[in-house]
Image 1 (cartoon, rainbow, N blue to C red):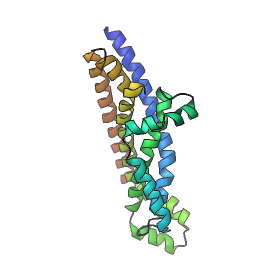
Image 2 (image 1 turned 180 degrees about the vertical axis):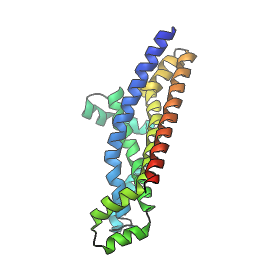
Image 3 (image 1 turned 45 degrees about the vertical axis):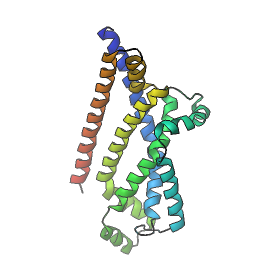
Image 4 (image 1 turned 90 degrees about the horizontal axis):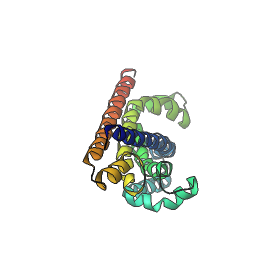
Length: 220
């Protein structure tokens, strides 16, 4: 395989992977962020508005979704992806299972980050007459930003791994390139190039996430 063709294939697959990461990250945050806030707020022990039954139901939902291996979850969600985007294979269709698989992970990250906020700050806000919504918006979220950024970074890195696995069943991206062109066609250089780009993506995202988290921490 010529070097030019290899670059073309890797470039196209990298673009597909980046598109999957962008869309699935946004969708998983849209699903998981409010769920994580609710888990924190309704916690019977640490929440600012304890609701034991609601918290238990949300916990069971999150644990159930997290228990599914991604490959199995992706297959189960084929009908949903086909209904939403008109197909069950390809880059856009893969966003559906990626987002749903990452959403409960995001929810737990958000819950943990918010629970780490100093209780004294929350009590001070309560003493000043702040409502629950004001405490969440003006106290919990600003104080938890460093941990939130670290958690979102970890989510994106996990989504890179999920997107690579999605290539095994027609998800597109670097995983599809490594399996279809590299493994099945006995092209080790293609597989090596795909793996190298994945490693570089992980390193780049971790670097950016760490710098952002440190920047937010220095402003507290």
